[in-house]
Length: 395
Image (cartoon, rainbow, N blue to C red; front, side, top):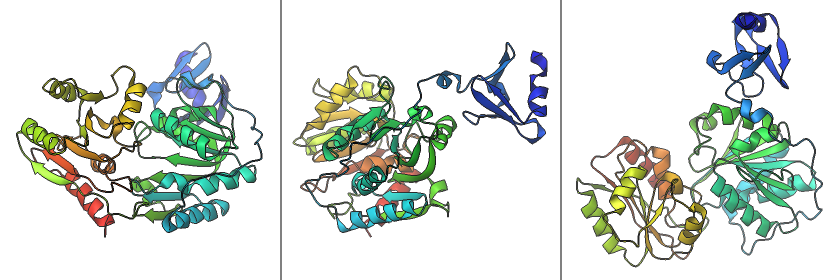
């Protein structure tokens, strides 16, 4: 029978197997009802059952099948006021979601986009509308959970991510995009923060999970919004081109040179009393360069031990040198930081990544400026475009 399973799929419209509905389109096209897979090589037939290799490990994972009862206290508490632009953006989001429209907020790094969704969260809780916040990266989930616990004191807030997925229900649920498969048709409003970030960006499997976890409307947040969202006329757009403190965005400078180490040492001497964040395209290059410096260098990349503890240490610094990769591309705010992008003409540094890295500088009101250096052997299209966009935001 195994050799005839494709024919079987062709003749039947839907075939329930293993708790998943497999659908056959015209011309014998097979679609996994769980992850939308259509690639033949991902389907496997065994013991009269058809499996999808791409999503089989997610099928039996713990799922949510009931709503959580909210506490009744929905207010948030901030020790500062939103800016006029933030309030306007917040009202835009709330009005359009209540009118059943999807929304995209394209806000520059440091604009305070998280606060923009606070009124939406409060409104959803009041109306017993289930809202969730999906974020590609675990470390950003953890940081946002701490922040919302502080601001929404009367609400239960949980983070759901790899290694922390026992409790799945709360007033406010913040989860990595990898965990979206646990919430099929669960949310009525979904916020996707950093919608263009790795590993969600370009991942069809995660996109299919996200599409199935919300049966209502979506709010997209990013400083580098994907083109397909910006071009979608059905999605209502709002552009926030100023930071909350009102100062211009720091603009990167080009440093074209073949003497990377010389230029790096020169940069570090100039800013020896400040916090320096040096971005490398690869872990290998980072480690090789770090060997040429003293033990005071702090390294942050995906393969270091005790990564979370190191990150917490970095957040407390006001001076020093941190060598990192794109792992600190976004989701971190540091005091008085200066940035140099080492080998900035490397292909990994695309336009959006460069914009996000530049967005680490000048985020604090007391230190709204700082130096950003693109250090490369040549001037790439990504380097030019990112600088042009940042300059354009400054008007």
